[in-house]
Amino acid sequence: MTRQANAGRAEIGIIGGSGLYDIEGLRNVKELSVRTPFGAPSDKVVLGVLEGIHVAFLSRHGRGHRLNPSDINYRANIYALKSLGIRRVISVSAVGSMKESIKPGDVVLPDQFIDLTKRRASTFFEGGIVAHVAFGEPVCTALATDLLASARSVGATVHRGGVYLCVEGPQFSTKGESRLYRQWGVDVIGMTNMPEAKLAREAGLCYGTVALVTDYDCWHDTEKAVTVEAILAVLNQNVALAKRMLRQVVPATAVAVSCACHRALQDAIVTAPDRMPAALRRKLALLMDRHMPVRKGAR
Image (cartoon, rainbow, N blue to C red; front, side):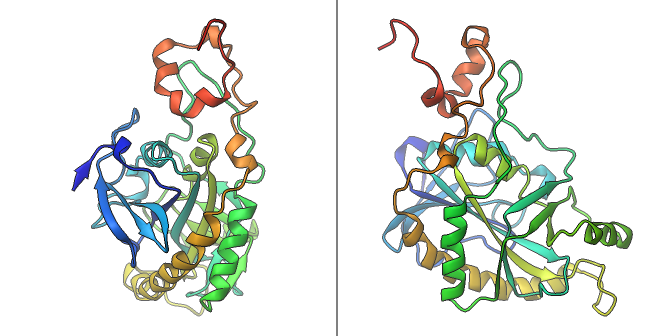
């Protein structure tokens, strides 16, 4: 079933990464083809009810895994979820471990990112409107707390906190790169959470990552070189775990709270209103309107 964005609303958005292309237990399912000013999202947005909560699910790579990390339209994905009323986004991502203590099959809930991507649009604000959002704490603390509780409740080996290094891909690292990254003290390596987390912050959305560890990248001398075949074997187990986590965390994190994430744009827009291009102002209205001063005579 295909409908327009204004036909459905949801409370929580779930972005599924490699291996997570659907959500078990989702009822009253509808598919929406969402149009955005930034183009088409990765796939249709799937709306449904999970544990009594209205959620929206989006496959980051598209069903059938059609999009490599650099070809994903991150702006359209985040904008589409925002347009459906989403206030919290749970990102599920496959990652490699950069530490001996973080093993394949574990779950990591990163609280920091390093962005080494090169080819991706990383802001909604360009072409005549400038905004500088605070990004020192890129993950919502409240959402991360709920994710931790859900991971523990389903018996996951979970690590709270850590640095997620995002590389361009789609190739895996060289050994030289992997060893360098380990010297930086990063915890996991992936290809998709940047600029996704940056855009979620600009859109005023709470954002949290469930990083599913599939391998040791290529730095580990006693492990086999990372291959897609090896990753998929672990990923299938991880995805089953992630689905159980989602069923636990969705009702817990749906409780309405006032979060600083939602006010990220409040003092971030620096362009004078009378200098903003009218067409661009309309394009960004969904993100900006609640943070802009009311014009004299406006009703």
